[in-house]
Length: 84
Image (cartoon, rainbow, N blue to C red; front, top):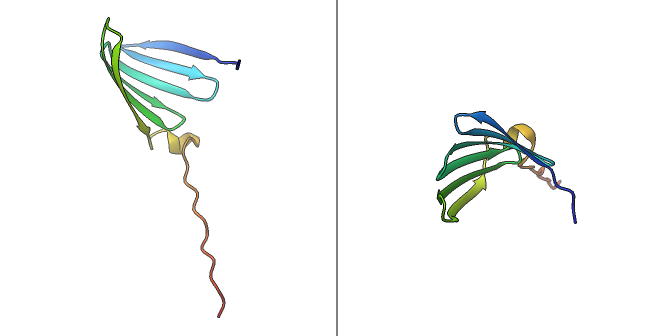
């Protein structure tokens, strides 16, 4: 078993600040529709039918926080040139 930590703080108006051991995120929305943007470079949209347990989640890489906090950075290799 591994150690996990997660704390969710309600900021009001359907907005939450979520803090975990590896990243933090901001969630906003209502029951049924929620958008989450994480410092690890993920952007998640959730659609659900409240009370049924049925939901659809779409998650993708985000450039909003990923570039600022190092969640998803692209490294470019230098080109080698041959001497003639």
